[in-house]
Length: 262
DNA sequence: ATGGTAGAGCTTCTA
Image (cartoon, chains in turn cyan, brown):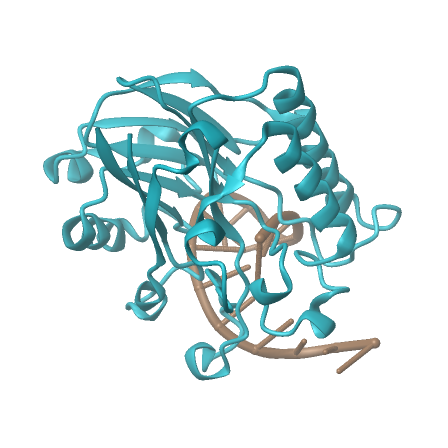
């Protein structure tokens, strides 16, 4: 069995229903994982997605903030939706395909402005969230699993436009990279995007605050596709659809794709 | 040190 999977921080699924439909129509991934739906589950516009062949959805949502969903052409059974670090936020959903492959979809907390948990509670929550993920994967080591989402951390020097300028900026600080690495190691996760594209700068997010985002290109790779070692070798065709960032009224994130031949 | 933009839902928070 072969399937193509995409992950996209959509920054309001209701406002950008048309952009989701465009991506599904033009690229037809088998599975699309969304983050920052900013919508209660019952207000996600599922009918339009169903009409395009995406008959299955599992999701967690809340009013105004956060929210994650998995849209799929194939049946997907919900197997978990954890509130890591007990924040009361809709940031995780996991589903299982008919062949047994488990897909985890995450929206890791952004962490606020200051990278210091003594003065910025949100930064502490981000680190605690990653620690809770680490502990969960340590206790129950995943197999035949894929982890995607907006992890809100760009771990490598070539995942940001300027490593030296970014090292004190939330999303690229050493303490965040260490927490992400510990969580990755606990699950045995392989970074599929970097397995396929090991060289060169890769970004999936460009701030709205830069009007000439394309020319300035001050991006970060915040959105990731990982897999457990038993299936990571089956992944190929990784790509980031930068063009979506230039669509009308875009999300500030571009979708990330990978194909698995299992 | 600061401000720049965007979305939800309410007059402010979050990113």
